[in-house]
Length: 456
Ligand SMILES: Cc1cc2nc3c(=O)[nH]c(=O)nc-3n(C[C@H](O)[C@H](O)[C@H](O)COP(=O)(O)OP(=O)(O)OC[C@H]3O[C@@H](n4cnc5c(N)ncnc54)[C@H](O)[C@@H]3O)c2cc1C
Image (cartoon, rainbow, N blue to C red; front, side):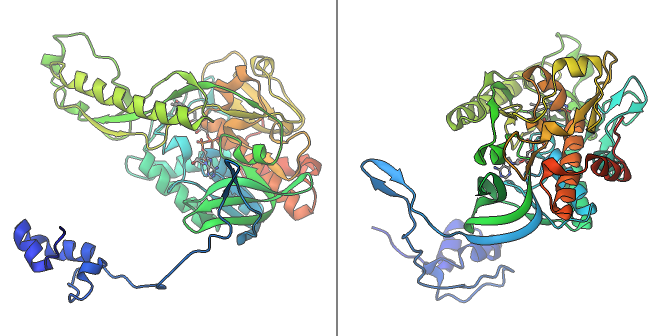
């Protein structure tokens, strides 16, 4: 039988009178404590509305064993020129670029921070922004982020010629937020893009799920920066569904406390990762098995098995002489999904294009490798454009590119370059009152160059 006890009694039983302020705050809303005087905990709370009953009129219903969603009107969360869905390297660059090009911009992200796999996935190393030594091919807004990181203590390392810089995820989250706010981009976090709003063959907004319910944002143009093409797929644009390796990145610490004399006695353990800007902290990449990043059961299975693997591996490491103090700092808050959907665009980048360093008159971004052999390659505008659906542009790792090019186009600098291009093109189309497929590409190229993008 349950029995009510007073707060004072509870604290006495717990023997934690010193905790009374904090605990009091946490318990203050409980009905059991409703009549008690409020402690001076610093917490405050109010009843916004009492006796709330949400309408169930639009709840899905079971009809002959099938779940049916009734028709319903959605409330409008916002209305804008350019809606960017996804706040990874591509989405952040797209949003800032579109705003700087003079459009009203709203950026929506499902998680609580910007950076996508670059920060939330703990993929900290930026590969491919240099070619053959000092020549840098990925410039523009992404490069601006890296310059700002240089001003943050411990924000970035290896910025030298021919190197692949490594960033600190928290510093980068801060820098991206700063840049988004400075640009004046409107932001909604904790909002999951779940559908496209259509007007015939043209996208005119997107639908989002959040704690506020299911709401729509209307827009002249939408940039799909979800990495997975969630929006262009929902709009009916053709795509290729792909499987690829899915891993989970982690960070380990106390590597500066490894005892070198003891460590010398056994072979160097595997899985020590690569240095980060924080002394004694490494990030550890994981290839993982080829799998389907659009299958939620598979994502759940991999998330759990990767976590168990990382934990057990850490215990093994700590049992290695000299490595007893090494700790697991964190596993990536975001699973390492590399490739899922690729748009079938009006142009498709092929391995041959990259291998031969092909040049296109409608170049809107340039990718590169640190090593030579076709080191610099053009990305044409058509790789961002669906074949038939209008007013939506792809950006980042889901642009139209052959499977064999995946390891080139998904690199972080390439993603911020294609995001940059999609943002400018979406803004130009919105301002000129035309479809993205009809924009004057030389105008897009001119604005990209004004925004310090490199176009070869
Ligand atoms: C394990 C691993 C290792 C890698 N190693 C490297 C490396 O060493 N160097 C390198 O340069 N690159 C590396 N990459 C690749 C690189 O990290 C990604 O390709 C790049 O971050 C993709 O950028 P993006 O903006 O296209 O997508 P993402 O980084 O995936 O960002 C997409 C954003 O959209 C949000 N989003 C997704 N769906 C929705 C939705 N429906 N509604 C709202 N928001 C949504 C996500 O939360 C995320 O913030 C690696 C990737 C992985 C997984």
